[in-house]
Length: 81
Image (tube, rainbow, N blue to C red; front, top):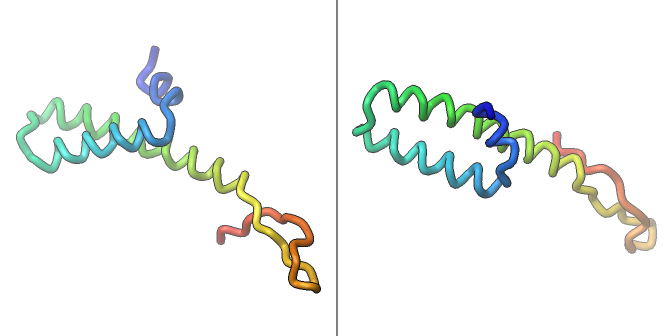
């Protein structure tokens, strides 16, 4: 199993939690160089996974369209830009 395979199975929350742990360990500065590089590589994979999950969630979100009477008249894709 590759490094990306196990990350692909993580929920957004689990991936963020692991990413936060990596950042915390690196910020403390007491991690040797080889482990720092491995942490950085893992962090990049986790970051990309989280970004993909967020993009997917944004694509599923719909906004409520207001009709002329002020009531909801339907839904439309969310314009995030």
